[in-house]
Image (cartoon, rainbow, N blue to C red):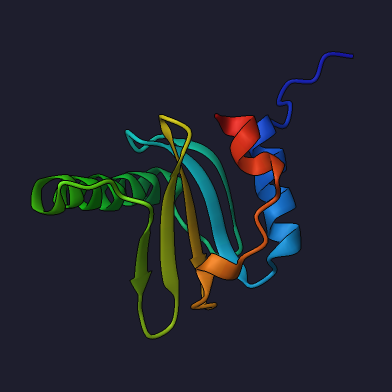
Length: 119
């Protein structure tokens, strides 16, 4: 039987990531141009609205690092009172975007196949 909407590799990776990191409210893989590829979230968020916002955060941060420090960007971390945002480039044209109340994003359990599969 032909499956109409097969689950993408990205969707599977996001679900796997969330399984190991239950305090993440939103996990997304988007294009660097702001198009949603795979998004899984616990809140009612418009993925067509939030995806370009993540891409803009990353793009502006990357330009700032290049222009001001002649260096490359590793990741972006925005800390707020309630939730925090983490954006990291994976591969050449995709971004991993997370929203969590956990302030220690660098200690998240990233599945080993996350980066390898998307490169």
